[in-house]
Length: 158
Image (cartoon, rainbow, N blue to C red; front, side, top):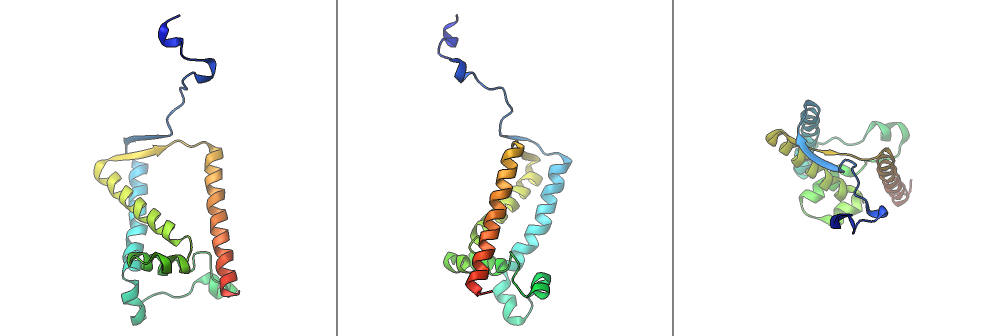
């Protein structure tokens, strides 16, 4: 037996599965996703950056269809103000308005930067997750959103 194989047991045989993440040439789908992310995130980031300038001039949108229909705040209620506070660097007020907001802000900025990198470099990250992992991530995200919403409803006394 070759010496290089004497240190490998049956339990430590190298796996030939594909890696979890790979940087590859951006496909048309990757570029479409990058343009979509930019088309949504950039106006949103600009709007929230200017929120405290626009709000006293009554140039902001208050309320939502959910609030109008059910007289309760929707699950994303407060996210605009949280982003505005994050632009000012006030983490305490951002968390007070929307506890998950700072994480959403960081994720939005990161995805915007990623979209710019994809479009400029022509390279994209392809993540290979099992369906079970995708389901787990979705459930954890939905649970966090639900708990955040329940906390907001309890805090507002609704």
